[in-house]
Length: 208
Image (cartoon, rainbow, N blue to C red; front, side):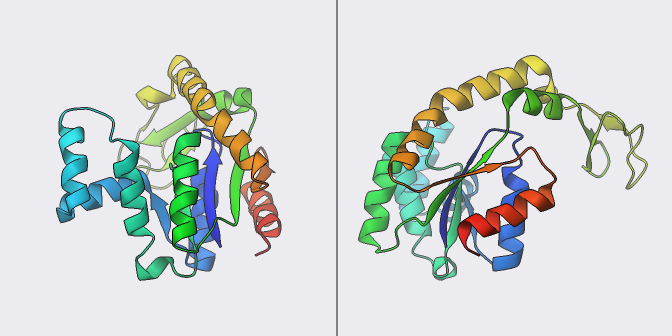
């Protein structure tokens, strides 16, 4: 099962990806993790990416696509993979399709965890994190239910920042959703429900 995972920040993508990884042993491939690993390993693409990262520039599409292609040739991806955080644009999606076609491993689905933006704003602005153990709870938690540590609101969980992140997401990802819909690969799931219900529907929609 070869999947691209789409969804706004706070839609619950990470939760669903973690469950698919746990149940089906699919590698969860995040471009951020890949960049860090390639830089650490000192691969030619890693060195190229590092030069852009050190300069504070965006890593170009061809380098990212090269890293993804390299990663998809590793043995653990033979049964399938979940791509998260890539592609981010229609141009990247087209390039990814071309590379996957060469590998004879086309995508099975682009899974969109869809949640109304107002629900996400409410969800993220009420999110609280434990300073001690990193537990993620809500404003209702006076102290951490796990370790009794202090709960606090992350700087990027204030309303103005959340709305800006959603605005950036919509501008960059809306064309991507249209692209995968046009390829007849888009699987849209309502993420504004209990995570167990969402996961059951994800599996059903993907035929797992």
